[in-house]
Image (tube, rainbow, N blue to C red; front, side):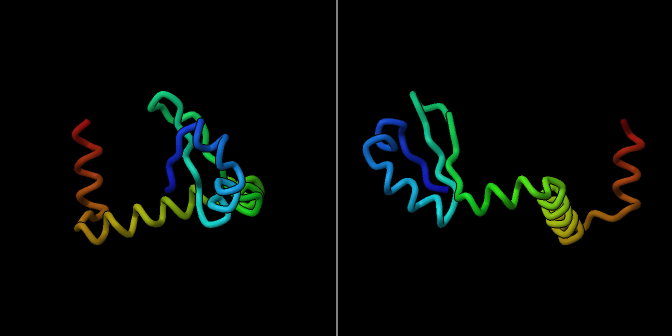
Length: 82
């Protein structure tokens, strides 16, 4: 993800808009994240089905857990310990 200061974003706004077409652009002020610029297409995709992204990320996490050896049994043991 591209990161840019608020001052640079203001001075190079056209570049920020172009970069947002390729991926999110994080804007920082005083070393703190204050905004993210995304393309209109990405915004519409997120707005139309907010659960689709959640489901996509959940599936990715599940696959990674399986690849790392997490099974239903191990998960049940972990949850039972709490």
